[in-house]
Amino acid sequence: MSEIRPPKMCGLSKPGHNPHWIQMNHAVEDKENRPTPGRFIESRPDGSVVIEVDNCELLLWNHEPERLAEAAAASGGAIEYQPRWGLLWVPSKIGRYAFCVVRSPNDHVSCPLHPPVGSPVELLKSAGGFTVPASELREGGSNRTREETSMGSFAYYGDWKNTAFTCPCGWQGSGSEAEDGEEFKDLGEWDCPKCHERLFMVFWPTREETLAAAAAGDSGAIAESENIKYSDSRDEYWRKNKLTSPAQLPDLGDRNILAGLTTEETASPPYPLNPRLKKDTQLCLLLNGAVVHREPVWYETLEPLERILPVLHEKYGKRLVSIFIGEPACYWLLGDRLSILGEYEEVLRKNGYVKSQGPRDKGDTWERTGEPDSPDPVVDLENWKASYGTGFLRFLVDERLALPDPRDGTRLTVECDLAEVEFSLSKILDHLKSDARRWVLIIGTLSGPRLYVQVLVTQEGGLWAECVSDFYLEEFKFSEEQREALPALGWEWPSPPAKENWHFHDELMNTGSAISGLLVCTLRAVFHCDDNDPLEVLVFLSSNNK
Image (cartoon, rainbow, N blue to C red; front, side, top):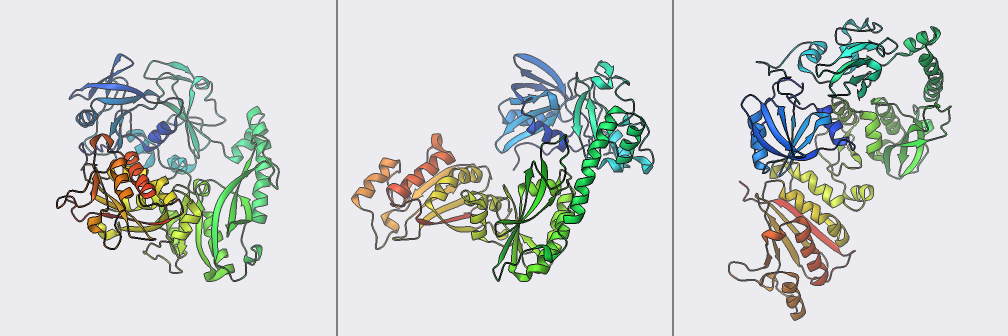
């Protein structure tokens, strides 16, 4: 259960209202303008918020002051202020809350009675924010070259650099004095250098606009027209060399085939390199780990995936068992358009693939079922181990944490070695702690006598560890040396009938790092396990969850 009320979705992404996803992404990635720690003082019914940062009191405004106060109360008054992006961050047990704030309480728009509706242009004006392609914002599509619109947008080769602007904060200056803001596929924003609010937008030029401006003598367009020549050569190479036929792929005998897509940067592509760029990016197709094809890659398009998959199927048939789409390839294929994610998954499902339930930090593994739109997830542990190496166990557990109910397959049993357990266990326990459900984790030996250690993770985040005792061991019993080692490591002696096993719980050491250290030391010093010894890890939701 959340520690504060749900956010108020008024429909506005203007300053002081709902944070915009692009705004938050830029804020998180901004390494130069990091949030400054501070202290929450009070919030008022009119939306005014008082905080203290660097020993100075600041008066801000937010449209849900009560919720902000609840979050601050839960954090003990701790906040972080990031004025460059107009965000007030409040830490919580599960991460942090983001509140969009206005620097001046008198300079804000009140929440509407109902969320705004209308065309993209109308929504941009009334609601703020920006998540749709710029091409959808051009009314009628015929006004591309007009120098200024009612939205404060300009053609790239218009006179926006010499146009005078006045910001509500009081700053005045020409467009050339404005600072670069967010950049999108079709346009860029320029912001006030004083308050960092948006002043105007500039549409990137089309090819035709650039060539026309170059012919008219624009020096910038003349330089850009040279770049167009290099772009044309890249386009021509792509048209002639993109993968379209099975004849372009190697014969690989009768082996099963694991395909992969990634990207690589090269300073010497097989076509002239744009002099503005030091490198060019190419899409690489791998088969069983070897690159067999390269072609220029384009940003935010699924065309390569839609084209390449049928060619692979025609060439290799059922021997093609999976495709791994690496994070670099995902970045180029998906870009930052949210709606394309569903299209991406639809392309793979229609080609008979299902997403493997596994780690996501290095990309996506898709297993081929041969049945379009199959709903069943596929688990291929060996493929995960080969693809992700050390740390795969932690990502498998994270996948189960994302499932809401035991019936959805939250129970997980994995065989791995002690080195993998030691690498992943601390993070696993911390993630289970933050889940607010009751989890059980058991680590048992697979060779020799069946010995185990286990941890109960309570809904409140408590970690209660146990080590098996002689009470539950039949043929095998701990030696005197082993029984002396257990209390030396920190274990409390068994006390039947209440506590038959060795046990440990300490509020001051209730961390994933402390408990994982205890368990790993026990596996090594008491169970005599080495790095390569096989272990079984069992993770499941306790039936006592409420």
